[in-house]
Length: 175
Image 1 (tube, one colour):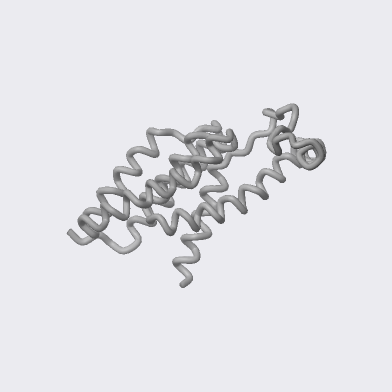
Image 2 (cartoon, helix red, strand yellow):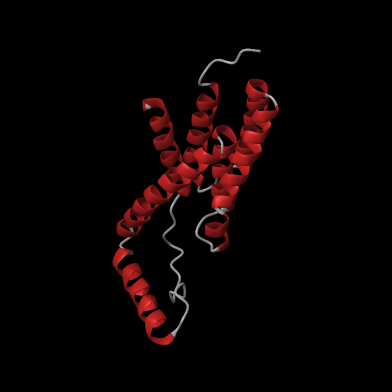
């Protein structure tokens, strides 16, 4: 069966846009979108490349999930974000997932600063981080002990994942 060029990219873009929308509106990335998308990626890869496609899918899914395990374990991102990067990897492979991870981190940092600024929490957060660093160097406290937590400022990280993935897709398209 012949599958048109770019089919994988189209399905990835649709998946990213749907997940970004739900993350922005509801602060949720739905499994009802992620699991069928990952299965579709597997089917497409098997149809396109056979066993090698299945291997690409496994490596991409594993890389995408693995890259976000530590931020998830530290409470920085949600499980939906982890699964979304896994789906990105399942469509495009491990190397793409790694590049998307790097761009996502950079874009995510900018988004975090923007959301903190918008909620007028940027300066208080910077002061808490400064105190934690000072405590770390002067008394050996752990660096991540930032005192009071501010749960009022959350960032829909699906937006950062979507934009980071789009940067990678644009790079593929332009090269």
